[in-house]
Image (cartoon, rainbow, N blue to C red; front, side):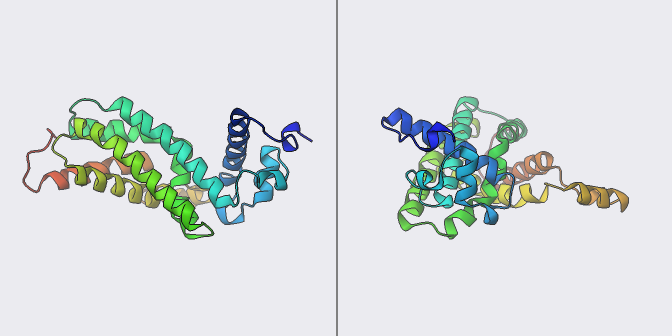
Length: 222
């Protein structure tokens, strides 16, 4: 048995190390089986913990998922802050925004599950803290997005971020095909029904931003 499964963490550094090990183990589980079939036992086994030791750090799989999601969201937020510091054209912004998002491959897979985790078996306190953290991270990137798209107001940037989340949550699962699905679409010559996520997403946010800026204010150059 792996030593980390029975040696209790003593320092804050050891606790953080244990948490990181749990999150990486959970990621492997969440990305390999349907979320509803993932269990605390599976996560413990993947991370090299006993189930009882896992409960020292998290009470539910939902809490583990949310911690993993926030970790990846934080990494993406930092990449946004680093990337957008000057005015940009809409086309250039949409392209760079999409490229940054598509580098976060795990976040792409986790985001559609977020609503599920918040609606099932999550305490009020965890829900409250999750919403506060999401708002905090959104607020942190707003000034940087406004530097790229200075005609957008604070509220328009927040609405854009909500649109992004809704679009990602709906389009990303649709764009993930099994070998069987790809074979059938090819046999039926229905390639028009296949979604290239990056291209579809970039086009969608470009159309959205153009629509927002078509209401009267002078926007960034198109």
